[in-house]
Length: 228
Image 1 (cartoon, rainbow, N blue to C red):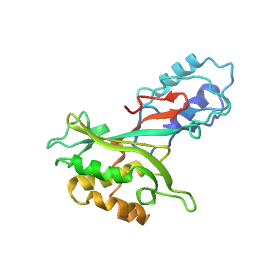
Image 2: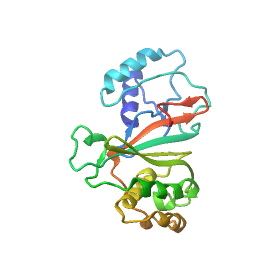
Image 3: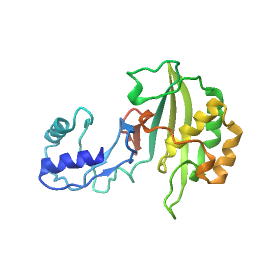
Image 4: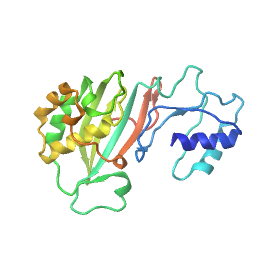
């Protein structure tokens, strides 16, 4: 998404413009409340015309819902207080073609109570090396404010909110919780998985298409529908 927006901005302004995203997402992951800032846009720019032009070039797969000038010291990434993701799982015997692009189909019922018990062990400030990719020498400590599973009709929604996430962390958390819901793991195993700091101890990385970056939190509020 970021690359496509930058290309469109380049065509619009006639020169290359770089941007900063609140959170980089893997290919196939959706975003509802993604935030970008473009430092080199002139202050005299008509932002309404920019938004209309970008939507004309990028829509309907990518849409710009708001454009505004930000303070010079604002960074979509580093000014963020937290990120809020939702992963959607359709646990029905028959798949739903309409939900297929944005949810993971799981044909057998999942034990939601066990999944939430497991999630409770993972909330808090931890080293999440077991749940994602970490560059050599980079810290893996994150503060996971919320990890919770709930049912909305035929869809299970796994909510995850943290100050930041390491690469593939949300999808690894989801894959592990699905294993718990299937009975392949128990909730009591979660502390040992965290403490082991070994990616092979956790469950698999869930497919990207079920994940959505719903909103990003800043000092003045959320970029999209925040957690309730």
